[in-house]
Image (cartoon, rainbow, N blue to C red):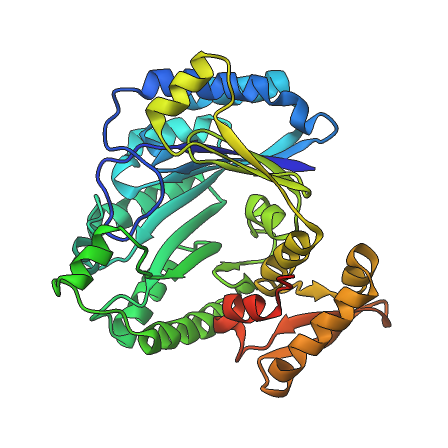
Length: 384
């Protein structure tokens, strides 16, 4: 099983914190969609022996596309790949794009999962991030979307300056009241060369405080658990049967191809990425050249990739998989490096059981170590 990611590199305006590739000009949209279809055809043999189970429209802001444009890309996938009967098809969307009419159109389309970028239900937060929507638009779109879609995930951002713990709880409970079954929640971070980075350096925006983000994360874990969500990945919370199949495939090391400018692909032994420039992407494909770079992953790269993704999830890192795929020496080095974090209560080795029989040992973060998962993973990497 494999997945296809389609990067739609257009936005109405730039969020201050965003470092993804996008353009606020839609002039080249038709050309770009045509070239994305061409890239799909060029790359159909890359997943020749795989069945497509998930399709994900990310960005950028894919909800800027019409349903006809979305359908044209889905038709190209259907014609050139083997797709399961009912694939998970996700569309990222902003609340200001999801009018009642648009939601009704999407409900009639093959899209069966919406990822809605709310980020906050408070005007002050939305303005500080330069979001294109307001709080009422967020609430109105969720009221309508939940009538027509069962599978919805909502993005929320925590660690925002001046966001008290009380306001963060209000954000969460506002969302819970809509009956949403999946939440993706991320700490506000400062990426180099973003507007947020510049504002902080100029003293126009408060510096971010790790302690605020940590407290918000702990509240997030506690409150979602009370509502029946499973914290299955460091930033993702889903009720049973509502985990993101597409993103889970990333964390479990399945193959996927990324289509569109800046999109990444992974086939377990190689990683590739497309040029992060719309004009260069279009020009290259019009000349029948794939606009990507390819990197062969060394055995150390593959090991580090598994550690990074595994520690972020409830499935952890399988010690038997480490031994079988990478060898006993890798397992010994991992256990040696992990020991001090086990002693500190940040990592634990747990037994995976099936029918009362222990079948594997899993290295995973404790509740205390979850917030530090990425940092812990980097300490376990093999660099030489």
